[in-house]
Length: 312
Image 1 (cartoon, rainbow, N blue to C red):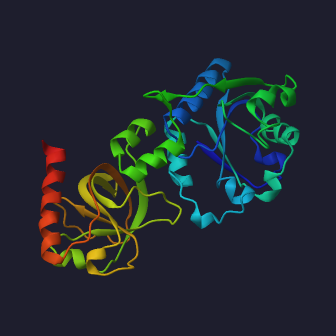
Image 2: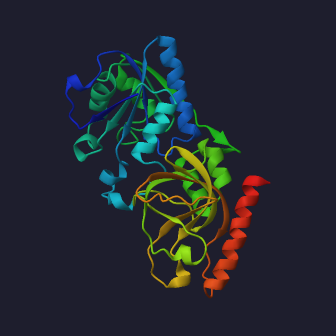
């Protein structure tokens, strides 16, 4: 897969000079609804014997339209994770458009001319709710008007699960509940984050539970604070683990939010490693304990629950 980063306006030499089926969307989470849209494009590209291209943005449009601070946004997938899923789905070209004010205020006709026709699309594929400007004039219903029969238009109906639309918003709500099983059903994979193992306060060692402290991006959407059955990928290998998202309130108020991972039957030094952490199942939400002894008793139970999850 070739990644093409675009800052508006682009130059023609940045665009591969060949026809493509172009799939449009932001695709936060690359969930099963998104996958349906992308795989529809993939099937059409095969039928037309052309490459499959996907166009997405480096940041959410609300950063520009709502003047929202970027660090306050919480994404289900980082751009790097999005790239991983796109490659896994068989995308040939991934256009990553910098969503700037200059790009955001393109008129609908200019967007179609420059970012669909200009990208040599023989067909444009999107979800039913895709917009490329003000909703009342730049939705999929208006696309034929701007297309002027220069490319085919394929609109993919919403994908549902248990009667409700699969959406990034629905997934975020489930993350807030810690319902990781339902999150995985909607995503089509187990929810995970990526980060770097850094030094913490080493308190876990004194409790008998040495943990890998994960430094993650501020823009990452975490599940609800709690203790989870998890897995961690270190140097290409997945290990069974127990993780904690919380502020360690037992040892004082106002502490920084951390993600700490206790890896089962593991004693290697992994500081500095870039890792991926999956959240399979919420064991319990965070509580403040009276002291270290009560916390240790609960951690012992958490470890037993984790081992039972994997081995029973």
